[in-house]
Length: 404
Image (cartoon, rainbow, N blue to C red; front, top):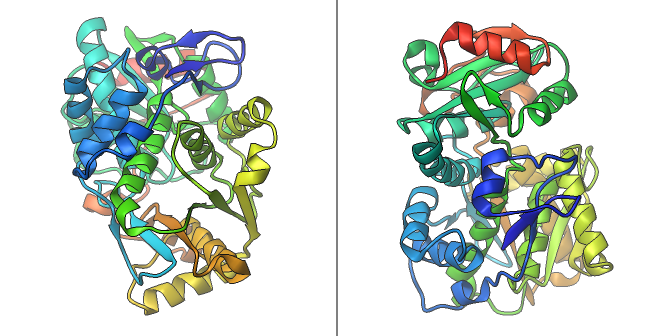
């Protein structure tokens, strides 16, 4: 499997992951004839071994089996467990990593790939919007890897929370916190401007969720999860995705295209609609629809879910012995329940991912000061405030001495 931009430029996994965004508008999309079935239907094996097999099957030109095993051991060390009540709906827990979110395996795979690139080509600066668990996942993933540093960008007024103090560059770590004058669109514009450029002698990698290595990690996670559950599942299999997570939706679509035997995808519609606001995720879903017209309509099962209904489902799930879900997972849970009630119950299984610990929602839902995983900081002091330009970013990081 390779990655293609909207002008037809084709890149390897390594090349695409090193940039993050292509040199033209849009996002890198998977292309080629990769096949997940050899990994999914192989004899029963540990989760990391199945993930390694999936990586090797998808990227034989980039990864030999030994390297695939090393990457999988770092990015997919623990199998997700079913949490809460068991029935036609299986809630799988992906929150066991350092940030308490599914972003950990994605960030770890990207960091492991970039470690080899940095050894051969010199230092690299990772750039990403640090909001939510993203910042902590990336800062933990690069910790201790020589040649990698990280600058987390925050829209003006957005708290820089969740990062552990010892990961900050000003305390001897590798992570800088930068406030960008402007909104999230201004941050996105700066990320796109920086992709493939150099800042203070370090090549820039845009490390957000649309990075091809991170999209690949989502696809591999789906495959390894199915392999883990396949002996206990009969009937149709659906995956639940919260409305607005267009990248998660895109990962499911490409996993199906690569041979994962999904019957369908359950999507909740909330305040952000089906595809949400992420331009890269929207781009990928729209390109899939153009390449495979009609497939999305046959795979997607859409359920409107109000926030109050999601909170009610979350409370009922916790009362039945499950963990307290984050709001996105609760929306997927409510959509799955409605799909079962609409006719799927008894002959289908819906896998709902628990994508993050509930602490990442607490500040926005209740104004509380949550306990972040690993003792992450609340509203940490930023290292600099800049305008949304590459030159200002370079001056700020150079003044701080954060790259090296």
